Length: 358
Image 1 (cartoon, rainbow, N blue to C red):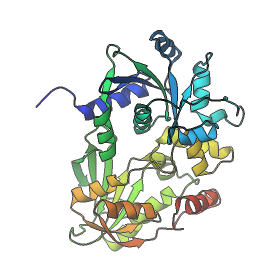
Image 2 (cartoon, rainbow, N blue to C red):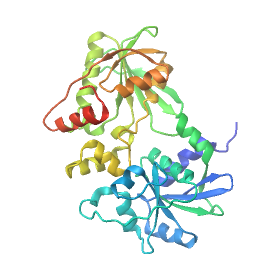
Image 3 (spheres, rainbow, N blue to C red):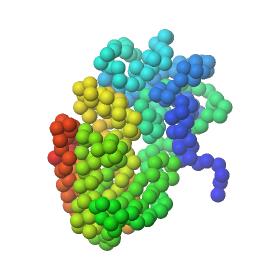
Image 4 (cartoon, rainbow, N blue to C red):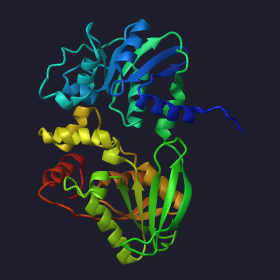
């Protein structure tokens, strides 16, 4: 067994580097692109980038570009040239929409039209996978600066496309309010990402459809009892129904904020306080409506021996993804709980823009 890190190990290392403000190199044969997260960029490292020479540019998603009225010539992203006087505050203003309403004019922003954008596109995918704002300061370089993590572009795309295998770590009995005969299973991804959990109630037979729910982690709703969403009531309602039936599996997936992470979710909440709905807020940040990967739930179900489910959900996308990856959904079981005056607009937006069956 080799002690040298493989491509998946390097991607995990790259995520950690970017989160602390270090640059990462994307390599595609003879092309090298140095990328930095604007969110974690420091003035010192921006100055260090200038010493390398060349002309850096800023990669942002088409969602963020649309907010800033920048032309996304590359389809799903825009490569924005930096003004001669661009500093850290300018970069942050383009990347983070917190002050868009107070200072809406960021440009005019000039987008590049020539040359390949594939490595820029990959840089945004890597940032999203690290739960950072999708705004990457990029520079083509001729050599790799000493000590930087280097990602093979083709291998990194393959890893991001496939998702990481989920390996069981341990399971143990955990009596809960909804059912005393329950077990908690812990799964750890091979790519160094966050662990995911499965709460198994009773001993559901593996050869029959199991009552199941894919529940994405929601610290504010599940733990704090936030009234801005219906996550906490859905979590408790699903467990209560499984307890009443005597069997079920709740998959607790660490995909906070529809997959954008808690910090970005709080950024979206701040934008909602400015008058934007949940979808608009995600778009202004540069994300899609929903960045979650529901294949995770299917992987955990298969690892536990299940091949068919009665799915507790209001989200048709979960049903489609389950069936696409080989988990048969024999029944959709509605889970309509938790509506209150604070989240009525949020739920209406989910129904209107995201197709939830409410």
